[in-house]
Image (cartoon, rainbow, N blue to C red):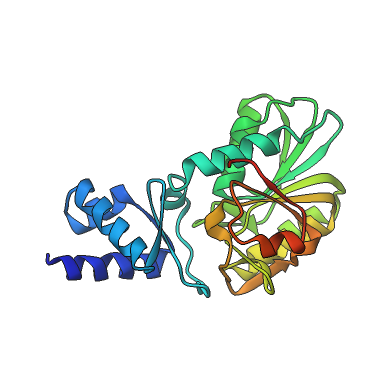
Amino acid sequence: MLTQERYQAILNILNKKNAVTVAELTNLLDTSESTIRRDLNTLDEMGKLKKVFGGATSVAKNSGVLEAAVSSRENVMIKEKSAVANYAAGLINDNDFVYIDAGTTTSRLADYISNSKATYVTNGIAHARKLIQKGFTAYILGGKIKPVTEAVVGAEGIRSIANFNFTKAFMGTNGIDLEAGFTTPDIEESLIKEKAIKQSYMTFVLADNTKFGKIFPATFSKLEKCCIITDILTDKRFADKTVIKEVQK
């Protein structure tokens, strides 16, 4: 495959998935990791994509309704997600009633949580498994399971959340925009997120720096309703909209 053809193939894959790992591209394009890494560096310099640890993400502002599977996103921005999750875990107190949203960064949060005296509610299948394996008191919402994100969504899930009053909610997001706010590709998942935020006294959105400047079809909250925990903030305009904690300089 010629270099230009490979560039276009990488961009086509990103247009469909929004995020991709070096390992995935190596397999899909039948080439070496060193070649893929070199291609990603070049395309990043050209402004065609954003190179991140272990792969790349799309730079398209309006990212559409397609959403990458959990398996392809959990190995992207590992260091940044871990730093964000580790800090967030330290915010949980003994008497907290905590909601944990489905998502790859919030899944990392479940890895770092050590407080066994708090009570946890989640709509993430993997999150619930991690919590009960630690012996924590945990509940999972009832409803339809969305295979791509392994999240419980739908009307039953929303009705479940309506019965709870959380002290803290830790949310994931696909995009963060100054005007559109926090966005996600799926309308049903957006409604779950919106209801969880409404039922929580404090809400923290956990997001690495690649989420800023992206817009997906469904807004689940305006920026001012949530605090953001991120690795690094490159666009300081967001700090004028809400409280932002940077945990990795």
